[in-house]
Image (cartoon, rainbow, N blue to C red; front, side, top):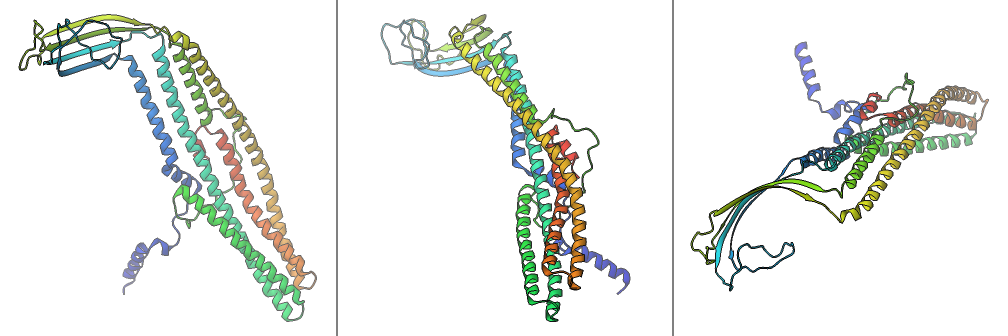
Length: 457
């Protein structure tokens, strides 16, 4: 076989080899995990649909400025018996026009009607403008809800990602402890067999190894639970490799002491503005309604001039037409009685929305201050954790050497190993804790999901 063909064959086999045989799928970074979750989350999709509905609501509100045009086409066959007298407006008894009849008849005739009515309010004392403004604020609130939903999801997924990394670091440290205690157990067993050390040392070494093995089982269980939560958001396989981000640098710009354009504040402010617009609508509820109206219509009837019934298709054509233009002013007299109550209700809703906005601002400010304090404290703890881990490793090495030289007990060795295992875990977790604190600061100050994504590695 020629070398060139052999190389080609190896390359083709590698290309066709299943991903499972080639190893794990491509590593998943923190930023990629958050973006995948944002793309597939149904909560984000639902808030987006609601925002789009609010946008359409603006168009509907603006259409109230347009004239209203109603068209009618009616064909009926009915008797034409009529009497004089008054009926209050209602929707049960059908109206009939024409002179009263001397006696009732069961004969029926065709009747037709075609007409158009145009109604337009040239001015409304600001009621429609307030309704449009309320619809616009509903759209602003919808956009803020989308931004808040995305930002909260991004923070949740980032926390789940870091939780998986923390569980993997804990598992890695526990497995390292198992390896060290296994080595220690071999050394102790050899010393006991040589009668250099008592048999109780072998039992102690086995106990330490079993305890370290138990920690591995618990750490693996915690890692699997954390992975399952991340998979719920991201939708990738539980075995996908996660990239551990490096320690974040201190922010170069001064972090604000209070959030300004956070989506929660924008949402609450839009809700307050929307309530204020509803209040303006309520203040106009008792104003007169001025309408310009115009109509044109035609009617046909099978009733003859002598009030007798026509025959055949009489009444199916239009026998007469009319047109009219005019101005109507409607004054809702009793609405003045309800106007005060309506205003009071809407005013209370405005105050409630403003109170929620202030409460959200205070809560975000508190979260920001706590996050900034946590970040500073975590960085200081991380620096000390590194010192402690290096010292614990040095102590464990020296104690093990002293034990083999007969200068220390197995208890001292076991204690040094436990301290080293915990120090390794602490050093690994404090680095991830810095990221948690940094992202908490960004979450409390970000104006949307993009600034949060920009802060991710």
